[in-house]
Amino acid sequence: METQVEDKFKVVTATQVNLGKQISFKFMFDGQMPREWVGHSELYGCVLLRSFGPEEFRPFDIGRSEKTPAGTKQWVISIGNNEKGQIHSSGADEDPEEEGLQEILEEAPPAILLMEAAIYPRFEAACKKAGIALQVHHFEGELSTG
Image (cartoon, rainbow, N blue to C red):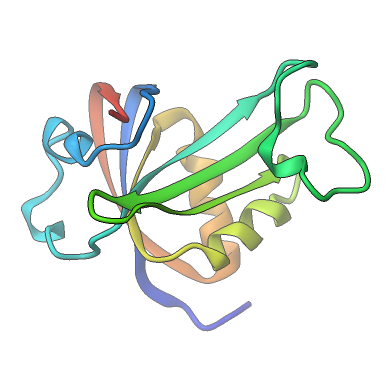
């Protein structure tokens, strides 16, 4: 395990996350993010655990010798800001030890992240295994990425 990175991520969870065409910082206001988090990072983003349909394009299969089997869920992290747009995007297949998730978390820049509350315990466990510290704010309700 690596040396712990102090509060690399600030996480806002929501009961449900509605995906828009882009990621906006609006979720921070709507989700009543703690005021002391302002200034943590100029970057914000979204973490998803999603299934892709058999004919759906999987961006993280590009360059792989073996394609992800249909039905396999993938962790997806997208991070950016208003000025630069998306600056980081990574994905990993779901696995029992969450090794792929740990790897993409280590590569991701510090950011304020939005995710559904249902996947947070697995995200938190992967961060702990990777030595990544985080803080969380749970919002009861629906938030949108855009």
